Image (cartoon, rainbow, N blue to C red; front, side, top):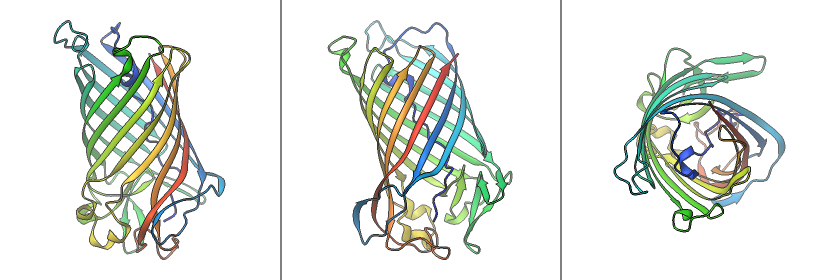
Length: 331
């Protein structure tokens, strides 16, 4: 299947609490707006009989994506004592509104830090999309797969996307052992479980599309993140590498049997050098260069045969995926 060129941006900005020292808040309320933008070069898929290979760039442009997210939060300090490990404990409630050219998704969440290096969070979201058509452009916000026509069928304002999730994160900063502005060697790891679905159109293992990203399914998903970074006082505040693994918790069960040739249990893996520029306490920019892997197949996709109509997964293909920017302003 031809890859959608306007896939909606996946948030790359690191959480403020991940690599920042605990500091007393001036206000229990916080407000911010994050603008995400990504550029995708073109990389044609290569056929394979198995194993792992790398696909080189074949063009300078394959698409762009963007979104704007507004966030309002309220933090309640819950110190368990005077010890530095528990004196900064906090409980935070927040609401978000994400807007893209083809969708709108409000969300709510809660996070709790019982100790300086642990954070637990949970949340939910619900949203809908619409279709933008102009000439040969057909950007679908929400759609269901129609096996009869072998195409995604618009269900704009007839169905809604929804998600519930929970996540645990562990953080470590070497500067807690050896204090110093130049001693912030940090590590971050997290594991997230989420159930995603649409209210109608995804029954009986039928794939669907949301925010231009297809091959989605009603079911549980996991995402594991690993970040190693170095934090500095200058404007270039953080440099590091992020590794992410994600997939369906039980893709074989979630997808109907007719789609199993694509290997629904495939694990998506990406490795991304990242840089965070902190211009002030209110403004920061995250820059990401993402190398990702995807399924490779025994033959090339065509109008009569694609990922959801019989292509057989044979291996893993690495390629340069995108350059992404995430600018955040705190009010």
